[in-house]
Length: 361
Image (cartoon, rainbow, N blue to C red; front, side, top):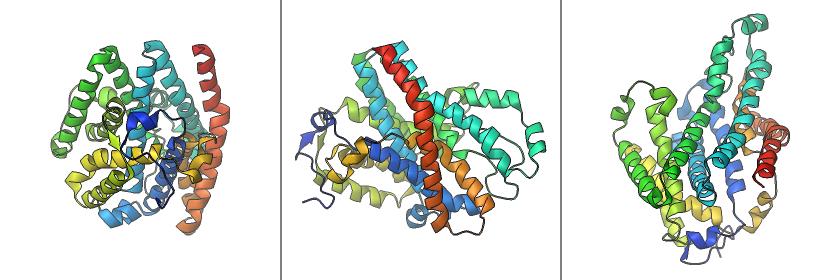
């Protein structure tokens, strides 16, 4: 019996097990959001990410990096699946906007106008120093807010550093739309080519960092970050598109995990192996039947709000409790961020999604 009592039919194909309604996607999203908070805790305190646990062990990746990579793997699988089920430009774009944008904009406003002033030494000077046209611009671009004079003397004087990944997520959604409009017969070839190309670019990061052309930021943002995240999104997309050909079993997932652990010690191999062997292990777990995790399928998906509010809550806790142990601050940050995620889901995200479902019906 597997130690976690997970059951997947031996040598099944991904297409077979992924058709089941029971999966662990909700648990994984919550886990990844929580890992981001755990990973940020030591770095927010002293500005040195090398003090983070996974960085201490492998020196190539943090729990935060691992979590964001996992988010993009799951997203690639689910978003491409969504397009294939309903290849309609308007419906697809509306669903993606409603899922990402309302929660982001509310968190953006709350971060800038409610939470950030608590980290300012002079609240009146803070509000007078806000660049409102710039704030509107970066909010519409789904970028993290830039505000003046907060957390002075502390590392990372920004109110919501975790928001950086959302614009890259939405860029990947638009990529799904563009590729989808080229036709279903081209899907596999295009996504596989993108996966191989972006993986290859990981081997020459210095060259990628020098890429520059007019309009680069609106199109891809930071090229190094875009290419890294694209690898994982493409891997998730390919996992769905080639699901009828991929055998999946616990023994291979275990072997893939061992390969990942070995590769994480080698900087040039970390991303390619995580996006291949790591993706295999992740999706095996995502579709495994784990009785202990069945309850997560029924709870609200608060992971997005947990992710969006984690950073500002952690910054404020560190600002007001600078000498408190991280062993206390991390659980407190998780509890407060989880509460914020619950409120965000019920007051912002779910109402917009319900409207989408009624419109689609």
